[in-house]
Length: 405
Ligand code: SAJ
Image 1 (cartoon, rainbow, N blue to C red):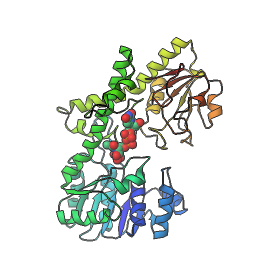
Image 2 (cartoon, rainbow, N blue to C red):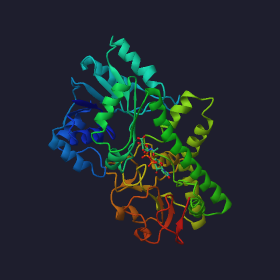
Image 3 (cartoon, rainbow, N blue to C red):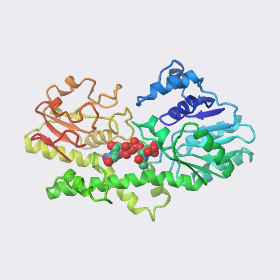
Image 4 (cartoon, rainbow, N blue to C red):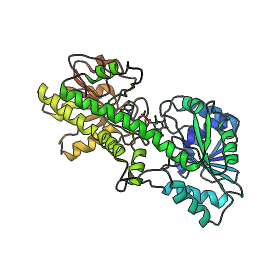
């Protein structure tokens, strides 16, 4: 039996996927409300295909509880935030989960850490928990997740995976569990290599997005169309520039590179610069919006609305979202009337002046800053009438009233 600890964005789909492929799974989370919701037959976030997978897993017998189980394999998928001051990983959740696992885990149990951790975190913070508990019989494994919100179910089935283990034969046993559903290549390596690989993957993407964002700034200043430049440059067989945007959000790409900066402050210069470049984008959007407002004679921020709060299109996740960063920045600049905000994917109130209906949102607005390219609006500028649009995601085509980054 596998006990999945932490039923969030990664733990839940992973647990459901295993259960629906014949593995006996119990999901554990310390949040009793979350467990109650799952036990009432409802999922806890929106994700393509998740509800169907949930139904299959329930049929296959998955159960949810707040209790840690006595079993042979644990998969820990709890959050690993970073300390905003030191830029280092905050391993408190992983450490706490590990302590709880050790209270019930029998001799020889395998504990797989799926949470993203920076290189050496397992050596520095997790192993001491095991030795402090007087245990030497626990098999540690690191199997970092790689799935992308918005396409999680597909990617769980089709992405290659990495498994880092102290003992290769244990790595092979864990590989077999993941191979119950994963149809792609599963590489077994050591724990530190697995830790580093995961952080490197997200850092690679962050740096490439930063390059696109810097190009957007250069092209704006130089009076060029960045999207046309990228479109043509990408016709080169060895060039693949990503898309500029209003910033990098989510709990992964905007966080993981900081682990390297925090641990290697003298050497991780390029990585730090990329982070700062991406973090500067919400402020850049604000500057662009002010520029356009001045040019169009709009002097009242209450006539400007912000479309999109989530960190990217067609997900309900708002963690580290560029919109929230931009609203914070507006508050910092003492913008008196907060702009009206709307996101069809966000039901609860998380921003001041947030509305929950497109018509109510657009009523009386002269300009809209589009921060997220949800399918609802992609390719449909007409939904905004003749309002001035700042299209930070390049999803509304070109038009007289459509401005880009
Ligand atoms: N973004 C851009 N321009 C782009 C691509 C993305 O501005 O060309 C922005 C997005 O809008 C978003 C942010 O970057 O705000 C990150 O989005 P994303 O779709 O690139 O990635 P995440 O954070 O949803 O998921 C990433 C993935 N990692 C990589 O692609 C290397 C995923 O595979 C990981 O599992 C996930 O991080 C994670 O949990 O670590």
